[in-house]
Image 1 (cartoon, rainbow, N blue to C red):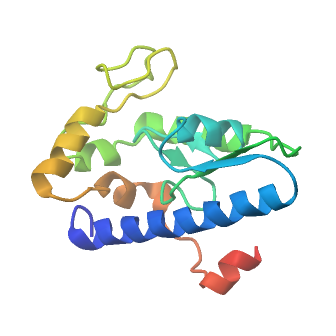
Image 2 (tube, one colour; image 1 turned 60 degrees about the horizontal axis):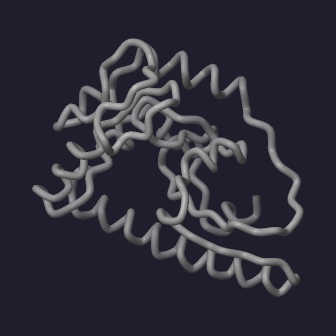
Length: 180
């Protein structure tokens, strides 16, 4: 349904649920006697932290792609001094996504603003001041993307909808999801 109001409503519901979940996680950690600072899209860049945590890899569309859900996720984080065991990055999945994104241009083709680069190879330099240069990746022009959101009074997500990694492998009910 992207770009349309139903897609924006689904994203808003996701962010609302995310705020509730990280609030509960933060409180749980504090009740264990550790510090916890929960945050959504503030305080630090979510995607690099998610990559470092082994949750997924960066795709051409500029979003985290996970093996389970593709780019159809919302990321939140909790900073804590609780000792945790870290996951290792899934290098096999990274190679798969890197190779696939190199030749797949579905997200670039559907992007009405040309915000997603059609470069054949990842670059180190950003496209504008909104980019964080110095990382080899496909840069997305967030300013063009945001202007589109403003003009349409809604967020977009067309790139997420068309991404082959977004395809649902098996529907899970909320009960099945949380039992994992």
